Image (cartoon, rainbow, N blue to C red; front, side):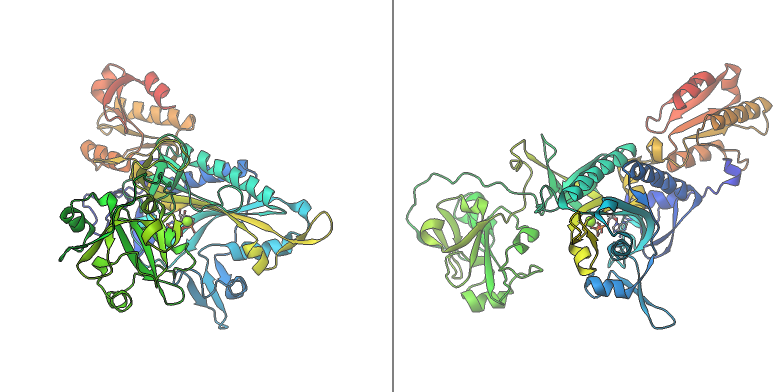
Length: 565
Ligand code: ATP
Ligand code: MG
């Protein structure tokens, strides 16, 4: 490729609306252009990256034995009504359309309905199974807050795959095959990532795994073990039960705590560590009753874990101050677990302490030396809190560490959820109709481009890993217009690299100064750069620079070929 004929449009200014580094760099390097909120055009340079990402995904999906299809982007409402998702799919995300005959459609945010419809007509016998169909296609989700450029867009490209099976064992087998395919794909892109348990997993092993690229800017917080492969979303990571303290019960006392409301104030005023205090959070219950959730004063409630309690209403809603006053007769700063009308669920860690402090259900009073067994009517002891850095890992190996991640992939064992609602069956060995078992496997193609940059950049710009760079190498001749030697050597090198299957671009633009070219290519992040100049050529040398090292070497042409090819 020749830069003269290729659109290179870098920007000096930082776009004001871009909060994240990947978003800023993608716009500044001219990879994407915003067309509307959450909707982007991919420019020639950006598209080269996207195509390389797609090629790696396609390659590994084909190796896994999956079959590529292309399903329609526009999907009939009937299928979504059959699955029950037309009015239920994550509120508002579905972009609904009507055609000239007043028929309803949506722009596909995902393709379970369409593929299950295809499966019920194409798959007749267990002999056709297992089968895994995949596609790489544009999706639309009308996100409430599109942000971070291509990381959370409304229109984006996803690789989605759907597998069909005669039984759960076969589903699990393909699920783990996809698990390892995803691992290979992300490794080939040079990413630091973690497969993260996204659900407790009721069907043998993990029923859902998210693949997270580790990055400070990630929207999710991941808990992982310092010593094993264990990793889970913080909301779900199990907080292990500590040993029950061995202390003897002490005399229960009511103590005045005037105007002390927060746990920190109480702990300081009564001179007890926060670890010996319990806070009781009142939330709405299913039967419009209140439910109490008791945690150690220094622990944070996990919304996801709380919502797993069947008596708790979802989404989790805190009781209002007036509801608390009406029911308990005190303000939120003095609630305790000792009242009897409200069911009390105690977190495992809180349940392990003895002689603790908690509110007395009376304004400005607390109780000292409370003990669960003696003083509280506990409904159940459950895992309710978020794990913290340093907690023991639930698999018994190492400690919990926390890091932020960007979800780039998500694989699920769906079971017969869609095959039941859409009545997709096949004949088994005995000639009986059985519902298909189904798995689905998503990967964010456009999101990956942003995630790769979040992990690979410096103050000068992007540092593309070799396999996904828009070009492998840029050759910059200095003053080629004036020096025939430079021109000839640069052209000669360009042809040699081309012949050796190197994705090379020669920057033959005459109206751009060398310094400006250097800055542009550093911003764009091409892994290798060769500068051909008269001074070097006199010694039969060229200047070589690797984008990730940024030190310049004077080397022979032969060495340059050896390093790059
Ligand atoms: P998120 O939790 O980030 O909203 P999701 O769980 O809704 O994503 P899935 O339905 O699991 O997403 O979709 C599979 C993959 O598609 C995700 O792992 C992600 O890489 C990608 N993806 C989902 N939503 C977006 C989006 N708005 N912009 C870009 N990529 C997306
Ligand atoms: Mg997901």
